[in-house]
Length: 196
Image (cartoon, one colour):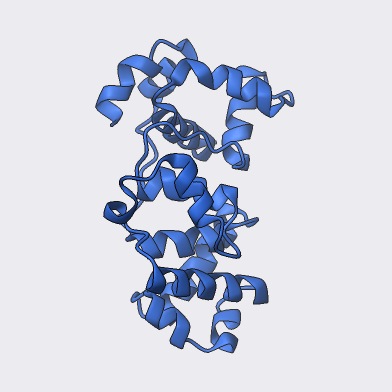
C-alpha cells in the first residue's frame, strides 16, 4: 500500500517532507482480536498509560489474548491490570462478538468501510474511533482518516495550521489531496507526532 501511496501523497509538499524525515508508523503484527482489544484499552488514555495497561493485560493473559482467555479472566484481575469496569465489559463484549461472528480480514473482505463501521459499532464499547483503528490497522484499508484521534488532529494542526485550532472540516479538506491513500498519510502523521 505505501509504495502505491507515496507518489500520490508526495504531491502535498508537507507530506513529502514527512516522507523524507520519517519511516511510516507501523504496529507489531497483532491478530484481529488482539488489535480490537488494544483499541478498546487505548480509548481516552495517553499513549504511555495505554501501553502500560496493555502490557499488564497481555501479561495477565500470558500473551494468549483470545476471546476464551478474556472471558475466563477474573474481573478483579483485569481491573488490577488497569482496566476500568466499563473496559472490562467492553473487551468481554468484543470477545463474545468474535465468538459469534467472523471479524477477520477474510471475513470482512467483501464489506465496505461503512458496513464494517456499522458492524463493529454494534458491539457495545466499540465506537467510531475504535472501528476506524480496526479499518486502518487490521483490515489495512487504504483510505481511512481517523480524525477522532487526538494525535492525528494535533499533527495536522501543527503542520498545516501553525499549531492553531482547526475544525474537522478544515482537516478533511486538507486530507482530500491524499485520497485514495489517506491511511498512508495517517501513518506519517503519527510518525511525526510521536517524534516530538
